[in-house]
Structure formats: structure tokens, C-alpha cells
Length: 369
Length: 119
Image 1 (cartoon, chains in turn brown, purple):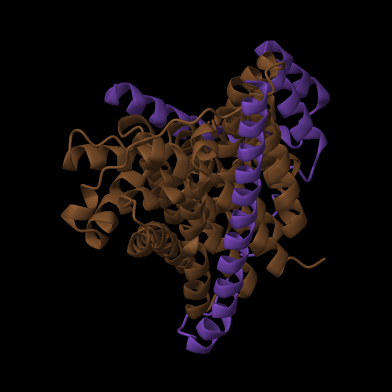
Image 2 (spheres, chains in turn yellow, purple):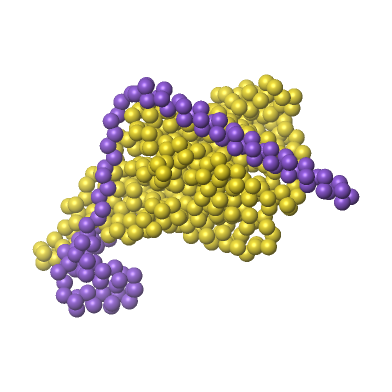
């Protein structure tokens, strides 16, 4: 009888306090996903996965490691997810006003600033570069870069990237308010709708892939899969594939992605002082991305006749579509007649492209061929 | 809702804590017929998992990745060195973005000219 209980409950003695802490972290992620509706499709599987892999002698680790090797170590999952994301994005607002892309570029400042900050705190160059890409506010790019640079902090980087993406409504507004005056926030920007031809919409993903591919060859897979998804959407003859990519494919990959990433959230690897530092650096990245976009808009205002509402610069952070909604709401709060949505969406999708370019540049700087 | 979630958690935790031990200690040396008994679970994935555990003696050896180790401190010289990447990166992004904008403007103009010609 004693043997029976020993075999049944003996594993309880293998529980460590570190595991308990990870259960709490997993619980918090699940709470944020369910109660606060913060990136639930990723935070919920990640939270549950964190509990799953931190149970004593967890048999799930082996299974999830197989999934990790099959889908993340070779970057397959994030790239496939990009097909779905590409199919979801309407680049119309950017094609309508291509200059908006400049804000997307400016808002990647946080990535490079964080790289320097991570170096300041002693991270080696590869890890610093991987941590910096949290500022891309784009999960798949972060995974691909961290993986390609063989960073040992993939778990912490993922948690930081997705947590801050979910926290955009909390992180961005104070930074924007701090850097802008009331008058600047009240600037109205009338939207001039142009007729974007179907040919332009079809050529756009192809041209962007070729341009980015030539300049940053390491980013070809990232930008190529994103733009392939968009081509499916815009070509007009593959609606069924486009819908599948947007819904079934994206959902399926997301389902596995969150759970699989959790394999890098085992207590012995995750509960390190470095993790806290990475979370802090992630916040730095998001703050300086926002600041980069806003300050660039203010700089342009010094020279241009048509004034730009500097708040839209903040949407260049990517984090689509959360960031554009946040800034649009901020605009409405200042002036209920100020509709910035089309501009914010344009900058936001530009940020999506710029973050991939930034990831590609980081790879070309540091990847060893 | 809260109560249901809490119960679910508790249930998962207790089961997951108990099951691996039961599998590890009971299943490792078990005879073939004991492995076969799991077929009675009428659950394919569970049967495969248990059978696999008994066959593979190394199944419990999980890959232990090296725990991250970093020398924490302040390294201003490294900060200064890394500023070159900030410069290169930002120049690179603006260059590529500028190229894309240029192509878009050209495509837009070409599209408009075609439209005018057609009209």
C-alpha cells in the first residue's frame, strides 16, 4: 500500500520552488490572455505551456522539443505564420500615401538603441542583437532572428515580445504624451483617397520582396513569405487560398507556436536575472521605437507645409493593428472630429515591412555565413 | 468562471504531478502485457505514448540546455562600439524604404498615365 502511494505521489517531492514560480508566471499569462484580452492567441498557449514544461519529470518536454525542432529551430512556424499575416494586411493606405513608410523606418530606432543598451549591460553581440529585435514588435521576426543568431534567450525574448505587443495600449500613450504638445496632438490630417490600381497592388509585394531581398538577403524568407501572403490576397484569383492563409493556417501555426515556445520556459533556463534584464530591455525597445517615430514626425514638421500629427509616427512600431487603434483613439480623445485612422493604419503596416527590413539588416550584420 | 478555471488548473497540476511518476516507475520495467493494458484506455495517443515510454529507456532523459550565463555589469566601451550598428542599421532602413517609395511613386505615375491615355 505504501509502495502504491509512493509511486502515485512520489513525484510531488520533485517539485521545486522555481517550478512553482513558473506556474505563477504561466497563470499570469493565462490571466492576461483571458481577463485582459491581451494577445490571447499567444499568451494563453504560452502560459499553459509554461505550466506544462515545469511540472516535475514532465513528459511534455520531449514532445514539445520535437515540435520545437520541427517548427521553430528551423524557423518554419514563424515563416508560415507570415504567409497568414501577409494575407491579412491591406497595404492600400501605404500605396495611397507611400511617404508614410518613412515613419515605419524611423520607428525602428528602438531596435538599434536597445542593441547598444544590451551591450552596455554585458550581453554578447549575438544575444544583444536578438534582444534588440524585441523592438520589431513582431513575434515571427523576433523568433527568426533569435534563432538564426543562436541566442540562448529565445524564451525570454518571446515572452517579452508578445507581452509588450499586448501592452502597447499601456506603453505607448504616456510616451506619446510626453513628447508632444496638446497643439500637436490636435493637428488634423485630411485623408485624400487616391485610386490605387490593381496592378500596383499586385506589383507591390513582388517589388518589395526583390528590393529587400537584394539589400538584405538574410531577410528574403521573412519578407518573401509575408509578401507571398499579400500576393495571394491581392491577385484576385486565389481568394480561397488567401482565406485559408488568413484563418486556418494562421490559427493552426499560432496554436502550436505559443505552446512550442514554452519549451524554452523551463525554470532552470528562464528564472535567471538575465530574464528580468531582457524584460527591461524589451520595454526600452518599445519606448524608443515610439519615441523614434514621434520625433521623426516632429522633425518633418519643421520643414513641411502640411503639418503631420506626430502621434501617427508612433504606429511605425509595427504591432499591427493594435498600435494604429491606440493612436486613433488618442486622436479622437483630443478632438472627437480628428480621424487619423487611415494614416495610422498606413504607418502601422509600413512598420510591419520596416521591422522585417530591420530584422534582415541585423541578420546581415551578425550572421556568420 | 474563476472557480471553473481554478478547478481546472488544480486538476491539471495534480494529474501531471502524479502521472509521470506513475509512468516512470511503473512502466519502465513493465512486462509487455502491462503495456498492452493501456489499449484499454481506448485512446490512441495515450497508448502510443505509454508504449513508447516503455520501449525507450532514455525517454526520460530530457535535453538540458546550458543555462544562460552572463557577466552582468556596465560596459560603456561596448556601448560606444555598438553605435556603429545603430548608424548602419538606420541608414540601411531609410535607404531601402526610400527605394520602395521611389518605385511606388513611379508605379503610381505610370498607372495614372495609362489611365489618362485610356480616357
